[in-house]
Length: 116
Image (cartoon, rainbow, N blue to C red):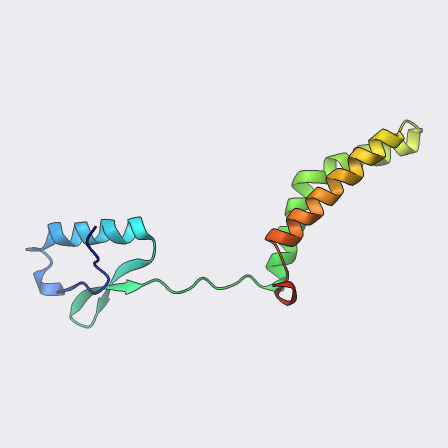
């Protein structure tokens, strides 16, 4: 595959080079690392900026959301069954295993900066 990372054309030549521009744009979209933007009198391939790491608050919210999606229903069921006396040792073991699994996933995939 052709490397277009240093490609550019004069903006005034766009009409005559539309097919080439489209090919380069497709290459940029496929790689996800580059885009085309006006640079002075040219259209040029430019590397995409590095993604901004999430803030501590964004990480905290992602951790909360993951826990909500994967264990909150079981936590609510645990509370109901404990209140009516039907929560068993087997239920507790299954719940604790799920909690450990969810916690391990969160710590691996959503670490705070000091944990990275």
